[in-house]
Length: 178
Image (tube, rainbow, N blue to C red; front, side):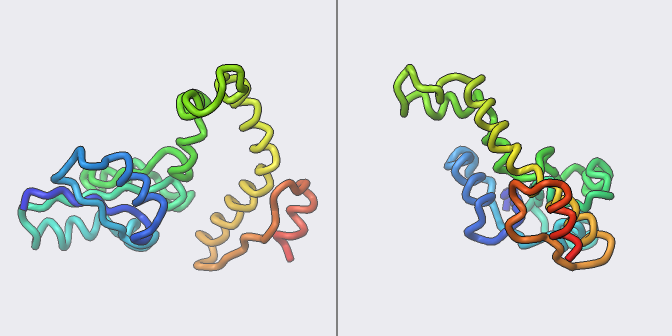
């Protein structure tokens, strides 16, 4: 009784659950993080709240938190939040890990680990390095979005090609269409 249960996408050892757990630590004793599995439960969360949880379990509040990749590209995130009575929150970024790619956060992380003269203490240098890394990931990102689009349109199929980092548009097109 009196607990707030936050359903997190993934399994017990998922990076999301471990990350949220590390951030929260012991700060919120009435909050329980529970891995909820995959996309199916998340997309039906508003129905679950309305039809089951609100009618059968008293004294416990349920919430759900998920990455941006969980919601189909065609789905309106704000409509899902409204349907769930504000109990579903979808992160703005595609993956939780994307929040850790902020150059100012990385400067804070590295400030006690590297000498003052290190490039890892300069936000502009870190931003440049992140952009260089990201350039090689553009084809992967395109493949990821393309795969998600067709999975949403055609059903649970996986069109994600292997080894698609650093490919030209033409090469990526050829390996996706195989």
